[in-house]
Image (tube, rainbow, N blue to C red):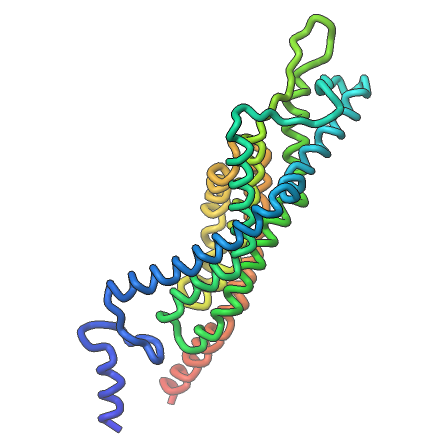
Length: 303
Protein backbone atom coordinates (compact mmCIF):
# COMPACT_ATOMS: atom_id res chain seq x y z
CA UNK A 1 0.00 0.00 0.00
CA UNK A 2 2.86 2.32 0.87
CA UNK A 3 4.54 1.44 -2.43
CA UNK A 4 1.40 2.31 -4.35
CA UNK A 5 1.11 5.58 -2.48
CA UNK A 6 4.76 6.33 -3.18
CA UNK A 7 4.25 5.49 -6.84
CA UNK A 8 1.33 7.91 -7.09
CA UNK A 9 3.30 10.64 -5.37
CA UNK A 10 6.27 10.13 -7.67
CA UNK A 11 4.11 10.96 -10.65
CA UNK A 12 5.04 14.56 -10.05
CA UNK A 13 8.83 14.10 -10.14
CA UNK A 14 11.11 17.06 -10.78
CA UNK A 15 8.51 19.47 -9.41
CA UNK A 16 5.97 18.72 -12.14
CA UNK A 17 2.33 18.48 -11.19
CA UNK A 18 0.51 15.21 -11.59
CA UNK A 19 -0.92 15.09 -15.08
CA UNK A 20 -4.02 13.57 -16.61
CA UNK A 21 -4.48 9.82 -17.02
CA UNK A 22 -2.40 8.29 -19.82
CA UNK A 23 -0.46 11.56 -20.01
CA UNK A 24 2.58 11.18 -22.27
CA UNK A 25 5.42 13.66 -21.74
CA UNK A 26 6.12 15.71 -24.88
CA UNK A 27 9.09 17.89 -25.61
CA UNK A 28 8.85 21.39 -27.06
CA UNK A 29 9.64 20.05 -30.55
CA UNK A 30 7.01 17.32 -30.16
CA UNK A 31 4.45 20.02 -29.48
CA UNK A 32 5.64 21.94 -32.54
CA UNK A 33 5.33 18.82 -34.71
CA UNK A 34 1.84 18.19 -33.38
CA UNK A 35 0.87 21.82 -34.01
CA UNK A 36 2.21 21.66 -37.56
CA UNK A 37 0.27 18.48 -38.31
CA UNK A 38 -2.95 19.99 -36.99
CA UNK A 39 -2.39 23.23 -38.92
CA UNK A 40 -1.73 21.31 -42.15
CA UNK A 41 -4.96 19.33 -41.80
CA UNK A 42 -6.96 22.44 -40.95
CA UNK A 43 -5.44 24.32 -43.89
CA UNK A 44 -6.16 21.48 -46.30
CA UNK A 45 -9.80 21.41 -45.22
CA UNK A 46 -10.00 25.20 -45.61
CA UNK A 47 -8.48 25.10 -49.10
CA UNK A 48 -10.96 22.41 -50.17
CA UNK A 49 -13.86 24.43 -48.75
CA UNK A 50 -12.66 27.62 -50.46
CA UNK A 51 -12.47 25.83 -53.83
CA UNK A 52 -16.03 24.56 -53.42
CA UNK A 53 -17.27 28.00 -52.36
CA UNK A 54 -15.51 29.62 -55.32
CA UNK A 55 -17.53 27.41 -57.66
CA UNK A 56 -20.69 28.93 -56.16
CA UNK A 57 -19.25 32.41 -55.64
CA UNK A 58 -21.86 34.14 -57.84
CA UNK A 59 -24.71 32.74 -55.75
CA UNK A 60 -22.89 33.65 -52.53
CA UNK A 61 -22.25 37.18 -53.82
CA UNK A 62 -25.92 37.71 -54.57
CA UNK A 63 -26.79 36.51 -51.08
CA UNK A 64 -24.35 39.00 -49.56
CA UNK A 65 -25.72 41.83 -51.70
CA UNK A 66 -29.36 41.13 -50.86
CA UNK A 67 -29.42 43.30 -47.69
CA UNK A 68 -27.94 46.18 -49.70
CA UNK A 69 -30.50 45.71 -52.47
CA UNK A 70 -33.35 45.68 -49.95
CA UNK A 71 -32.00 48.77 -48.17
CA UNK A 72 -31.74 50.60 -51.50
CA UNK A 73 -35.33 49.74 -52.43
CA UNK A 74 -36.64 50.74 -48.99
CA UNK A 75 -34.83 54.08 -49.15
CA UNK A 76 -36.18 54.84 -52.61
CA UNK A 77 -39.69 54.12 -51.38
CA UNK A 78 -39.19 56.29 -48.28
CA UNK A 79 -37.64 59.26 -50.13
CA UNK A 80 -40.74 59.64 -52.30
CA UNK A 81 -42.74 60.55 -49.19
CA UNK A 82 -42.31 64.36 -48.75
CA UNK A 83 -42.65 64.21 -44.96
CA UNK A 84 -39.48 62.11 -44.66
CA UNK A 85 -37.32 64.91 -46.10
CA UNK A 86 -34.88 62.42 -47.66
CA UNK A 87 -32.79 62.78 -50.77
CA UNK A 88 -33.41 60.06 -53.37
CA UNK A 89 -30.76 57.80 -54.82
CA UNK A 90 -29.74 58.38 -58.47
CA UNK A 91 -31.55 55.31 -59.81
CA UNK A 92 -34.06 52.73 -58.63
CA UNK A 93 -31.58 49.99 -59.53
CA UNK A 94 -28.96 49.43 -56.80
CA UNK A 95 -25.35 49.56 -57.91
CA UNK A 96 -21.81 49.38 -56.52
CA UNK A 97 -18.73 50.82 -58.17
CA UNK A 98 -15.90 48.65 -59.44
CA UNK A 99 -12.78 50.87 -59.50
CA UNK A 100 -10.15 48.54 -60.95
CA UNK A 101 -10.04 45.63 -63.46
CA UNK A 102 -8.82 43.10 -60.90
CA UNK A 103 -11.13 44.23 -58.08
CA UNK A 104 -13.94 41.76 -58.83
CA UNK A 105 -11.50 38.83 -58.78
CA UNK A 106 -10.13 39.81 -55.36
CA UNK A 107 -13.64 40.26 -54.00
CA UNK A 108 -14.64 36.79 -55.26
CA UNK A 109 -11.60 35.29 -53.54
CA UNK A 110 -12.48 37.08 -50.30
CA UNK A 111 -16.08 35.82 -50.43
CA UNK A 112 -14.94 32.24 -51.12
CA UNK A 113 -12.44 32.45 -48.25
CA UNK A 114 -14.97 33.76 -45.72
CA UNK A 115 -17.64 31.21 -46.61
CA UNK A 116 -14.93 28.55 -46.77
CA UNK A 117 -14.14 29.29 -43.12
CA UNK A 118 -17.77 28.61 -42.20
CA UNK A 119 -17.84 25.40 -44.26
CA UNK A 120 -14.52 24.10 -42.91
CA UNK A 121 -15.27 25.20 -39.32
CA UNK A 122 -16.08 21.65 -38.06
CA UNK A 123 -12.71 20.31 -39.20
CA UNK A 124 -10.79 23.40 -38.04
CA UNK A 125 -12.33 23.30 -34.56
CA UNK A 126 -11.81 19.55 -34.37
CA UNK A 127 -8.09 19.99 -35.10
CA UNK A 128 -7.91 22.74 -32.48
CA UNK A 129 -9.52 20.59 -29.80
CA UNK A 130 -7.38 17.57 -30.74
CA UNK A 131 -4.28 19.71 -30.26
CA UNK A 132 -5.51 20.66 -26.79
CA UNK A 133 -6.74 17.16 -25.86
CA UNK A 134 -3.39 15.63 -24.75
CA UNK A 135 -3.47 17.95 -21.73
CA UNK A 136 -7.02 16.96 -20.76
CA UNK A 137 -8.25 14.27 -18.39
CA UNK A 138 -9.88 11.15 -19.79
CA UNK A 139 -13.43 12.34 -19.11
CA UNK A 140 -12.60 15.66 -20.77
CA UNK A 141 -11.09 13.96 -23.83
CA UNK A 142 -14.45 12.30 -24.49
CA UNK A 143 -15.88 15.79 -24.96
CA UNK A 144 -13.57 16.69 -27.87
CA UNK A 145 -16.05 15.81 -30.63
CA UNK A 146 -19.02 17.52 -28.88
CA UNK A 147 -16.78 20.55 -28.28
CA UNK A 148 -15.77 20.68 -31.95
CA UNK A 149 -19.35 20.25 -33.16
CA UNK A 150 -20.67 22.88 -30.76
CA UNK A 151 -17.90 25.31 -31.76
CA UNK A 152 -18.80 24.95 -35.44
CA UNK A 153 -22.54 25.31 -34.74
CA UNK A 154 -22.04 28.43 -32.60
CA UNK A 155 -19.79 29.92 -35.29
CA UNK A 156 -22.50 29.31 -37.90
CA UNK A 157 -25.23 30.70 -35.61
CA UNK A 158 -23.20 33.88 -35.17
CA UNK A 159 -22.94 34.32 -38.94
CA UNK A 160 -26.67 33.60 -39.37
CA UNK A 161 -27.58 36.09 -36.64
CA UNK A 162 -25.48 38.76 -38.33
CA UNK A 163 -26.90 38.11 -41.80
CA UNK A 164 -30.53 37.90 -40.63
CA UNK A 165 -30.72 40.73 -38.10
CA UNK A 166 -27.61 42.94 -38.07
CA UNK A 167 -26.76 43.42 -41.74
CA UNK A 168 -30.25 44.48 -42.94
CA UNK A 169 -30.66 46.99 -40.12
CA UNK A 170 -27.10 48.39 -40.22
CA UNK A 171 -27.02 48.65 -44.03
CA UNK A 172 -30.35 50.46 -44.24
CA UNK A 173 -29.47 52.81 -41.38
CA UNK A 174 -26.10 53.73 -42.89
CA UNK A 175 -27.57 54.29 -46.33
CA UNK A 176 -30.38 56.45 -44.97
CA UNK A 177 -28.09 58.38 -42.60
CA UNK A 178 -25.91 59.68 -45.40
CA UNK A 179 -28.80 60.46 -47.71
CA UNK A 180 -30.71 62.14 -44.87
CA UNK A 181 -28.26 65.05 -45.05
CA UNK A 182 -29.54 65.84 -48.53
CA UNK A 183 -32.81 67.71 -48.10
CA UNK A 184 -33.55 67.45 -51.80
CA UNK A 185 -34.24 71.19 -52.04
CA UNK A 186 -33.44 73.03 -55.24
CA UNK A 187 -29.98 74.58 -55.21
CA UNK A 188 -28.84 72.47 -52.28
CA UNK A 189 -25.82 70.20 -52.29
CA UNK A 190 -26.79 66.69 -53.33
CA UNK A 191 -25.16 63.82 -51.41
CA UNK A 192 -24.95 60.59 -53.40
CA UNK A 193 -24.26 57.10 -52.09
CA UNK A 194 -21.29 56.01 -54.21
CA UNK A 195 -20.25 52.79 -52.46
CA UNK A 196 -17.52 50.63 -53.95
CA UNK A 197 -17.92 46.91 -54.45
CA UNK A 198 -14.79 46.13 -52.44
CA UNK A 199 -15.67 48.32 -49.47
CA UNK A 200 -19.18 46.96 -49.16
CA UNK A 201 -18.15 43.29 -49.33
CA UNK A 202 -15.30 43.94 -46.88
CA UNK A 203 -17.76 45.56 -44.47
CA UNK A 204 -20.21 42.65 -44.85
CA UNK A 205 -17.69 39.83 -44.43
CA UNK A 206 -16.02 41.49 -41.44
CA UNK A 207 -19.35 41.58 -39.67
CA UNK A 208 -20.07 37.93 -40.51
CA UNK A 209 -16.72 36.75 -39.16
CA UNK A 210 -16.92 39.02 -36.13
CA UNK A 211 -20.31 37.69 -35.07
CA UNK A 212 -19.19 34.12 -35.74
CA UNK A 213 -16.29 34.63 -33.34
CA UNK A 214 -18.22 36.33 -30.54
CA UNK A 215 -20.77 33.51 -30.46
CA UNK A 216 -17.93 31.25 -29.30
CA UNK A 217 -17.89 33.10 -25.98
CA UNK A 218 -20.27 30.82 -24.01
CA UNK A 219 -18.32 27.76 -25.15
CA UNK A 220 -15.06 29.32 -23.98
CA UNK A 221 -16.67 30.01 -20.61
CA UNK A 222 -17.90 26.40 -20.44
CA UNK A 223 -14.38 25.12 -21.01
CA UNK A 224 -12.81 27.48 -18.46
CA UNK A 225 -15.49 26.71 -15.89
CA UNK A 226 -15.07 22.97 -16.41
CA UNK A 227 -11.33 23.41 -15.88
CA UNK A 228 -12.03 25.29 -12.63
CA UNK A 229 -10.38 28.49 -13.88
CA UNK A 230 -13.49 30.66 -13.49
CA UNK A 231 -16.85 30.48 -11.69
CA UNK A 232 -20.17 32.23 -12.10
CA UNK A 233 -19.23 34.44 -9.14
CA UNK A 234 -16.10 35.57 -11.00
CA UNK A 235 -18.19 36.57 -14.02
CA UNK A 236 -20.72 38.43 -11.88
CA UNK A 237 -17.98 40.25 -9.99
CA UNK A 238 -16.31 41.56 -13.15
CA UNK A 239 -19.37 42.31 -15.28
CA UNK A 240 -18.66 46.06 -15.54
CA UNK A 241 -15.16 45.52 -16.91
CA UNK A 242 -16.44 42.88 -19.33
CA UNK A 243 -19.22 45.11 -20.69
CA UNK A 244 -16.66 47.84 -21.36
CA UNK A 245 -14.38 45.33 -23.08
CA UNK A 246 -17.28 44.18 -25.29
CA UNK A 247 -17.62 47.68 -26.73
CA UNK A 248 -13.86 47.75 -27.32
CA UNK A 249 -14.04 44.38 -29.08
CA UNK A 250 -16.97 45.63 -31.15
CA UNK A 251 -14.88 48.62 -32.25
CA UNK A 252 -12.09 46.30 -33.45
CA UNK A 253 -14.24 43.67 -35.18
CA UNK A 254 -16.65 45.99 -36.97
CA UNK A 255 -16.28 48.92 -39.38
CA UNK A 256 -15.69 52.33 -37.75
CA UNK A 257 -19.32 53.31 -37.30
CA UNK A 258 -21.50 53.15 -34.17
CA UNK A 259 -24.45 51.04 -35.32
CA UNK A 260 -22.63 47.79 -36.11
CA UNK A 261 -20.40 48.29 -33.05
CA UNK A 262 -23.47 48.64 -30.84
CA UNK A 263 -25.19 45.69 -32.49
CA UNK A 264 -22.15 43.55 -31.76
CA UNK A 265 -21.65 44.74 -28.18
CA UNK A 266 -25.29 44.19 -27.16
CA UNK A 267 -25.43 40.51 -28.21
CA UNK A 268 -22.10 40.03 -26.43
CA UNK A 269 -23.70 41.36 -23.25
CA UNK A 270 -26.54 38.88 -23.74
CA UNK A 271 -24.06 36.05 -24.33
CA UNK A 272 -22.26 37.10 -21.16
CA UNK A 273 -25.48 36.64 -19.20
CA UNK A 274 -25.90 33.19 -20.77
CA UNK A 275 -22.28 32.40 -19.89
CA UNK A 276 -22.95 33.17 -16.22
CA UNK A 277 -25.68 30.53 -16.28
CA UNK A 278 -23.37 28.11 -18.11
CA UNK A 279 -20.63 28.61 -15.52
CA UNK A 280 -23.14 28.10 -12.69
CA UNK A 281 -24.39 24.79 -14.15
CA UNK A 282 -20.91 23.50 -14.99
CA UNK A 283 -19.51 24.42 -11.57
CA UNK A 284 -22.42 22.94 -9.60
CA UNK A 285 -20.93 19.42 -9.17
CA UNK A 286 -17.66 20.89 -7.93
CA UNK A 287 -19.48 23.16 -5.46
CA UNK A 288 -21.46 20.20 -4.16
CA UNK A 289 -18.27 18.15 -3.79
CA UNK A 290 -16.54 20.94 -1.85
CA UNK A 291 -19.60 21.47 0.37
CA UNK A 292 -19.75 17.74 1.13
CA UNK A 293 -16.04 17.67 1.96
CA UNK A 294 -16.38 20.69 4.25
CA UNK A 295 -19.33 19.06 6.00
CA UNK A 296 -17.32 15.87 6.57
CA UNK A 297 -14.39 17.85 7.93
CA UNK A 298 -16.72 19.76 10.26
CA UNK A 299 -18.19 16.48 11.53
CA UNK A 300 -14.70 15.09 12.20
CA UNK A 301 -13.75 18.21 14.13
CA UNK A 302 -16.93 17.96 16.24
CA UNK A 303 -16.11 14.34 17.05
